[in-house]
Amino acid sequence: MYTANSIAYIKFKYLGHMPDQHLSDDDDDVLREVSNMFVRTNVLCRKFSRCSINVKIRMFKSHCLCLYGTGLWRCYKIGTMNNLKSAYNRCLVIFFGHSCVSNQCYTVIARSWFA
Image (tube, rainbow, N blue to C red; front, top):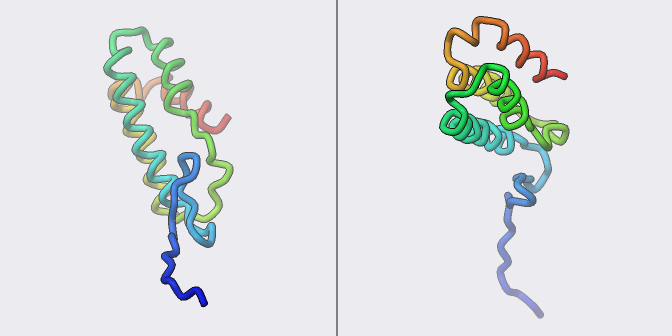
């Protein structure tokens, strides 16, 4: 008889996502995307801080709004999604500054979030 103890892994990382045993909790993926959004925003700030507003809008859309795999999120907490929304708003303030967030570029970028 084979009676060795086996260890069952509850969570694992697969292609950048963290599915759990029951595929019922996507909070880890959402929080990972929040941290990635800040990383990408900081990289853009370092490299493109002196560019025009049109270039910044294009770079922000292409780098910070690439939310691949969000269609797979189905079970997450409301607070986790609120963290993602507030991270998006903070990234706007970090990259564009306070004056732009209250002006027209906020609406342009906000439209691209849902488009």
